[in-house]
Image (tube, rainbow, N blue to C red):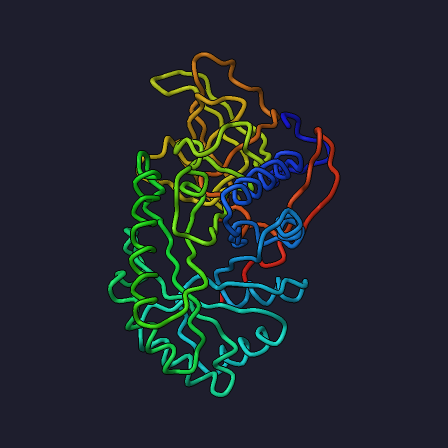
Length: 366
């Protein structure tokens, strides 16, 4: 989709429906062929219509980041939800978890005996309705315990009345050049050792959950029973630079208009400014990234600066500097941020607007 429909007012998030559908089907087919369950992380898109597509393509259930996200998707009929982060459950959160458990399977991450005990205490007689997975640190060094510590956390959870289902990890260190394959190996090793530790401690391990978009499609044996990629539905500039997707796999772009242009004069570089800044693209820029975003029609262009409502694009010498009013597509570095910055997205097929979707779980951060 190289054409921005005339009725689109910039800046606007565009979803290419054909590419989206292809990305969803590719991941679903890969998981099926490997005998793995797919539990996509919907914090990437926060959109009911996309979750429905993922479930229709064969996803076992969904992954969310917060109770609030879980509530949005449960209200739409999703009956199998994993909140893939350790929670500190107080009385109000316990009440919300009870309501979620009444509508389907709810699993929650834990990574300490203290948080598991607190959750069980707050849930009271309903503790057994909540499944927990012990989070394992497989090299990202954010949350999670070492594999050898998993059984201690599981014992505390079981002692608090919670149902221990298994282990999970997030190989976030895969989000660096040259790291996906090594991170996938780290993930497999850590999950295997943690699952073994739980089994030896007398627990029935039914779920071994891993996966990120950079690692999900890496071939090879895995101990995992399910994977939780999220960004794969859209792709983004980070995935391009990590070589985990191609330009043709990019389903989400931001439509923008050239509002300022400057030829190379007085020592200045050739550049244009477009009307899409950090408030729609997001501001993520890893230290290894080529810029703050990419332009699919001009791969050599560099987005060198963002302000809140504008982006500065250094233009390649090999291309004609676009005229004022030219409309360009921009690929965010981190697509999850872009989706959480807008209320709705424009769905396009073959250059024609076919729908508008609400970002239903936007802002549901607790």
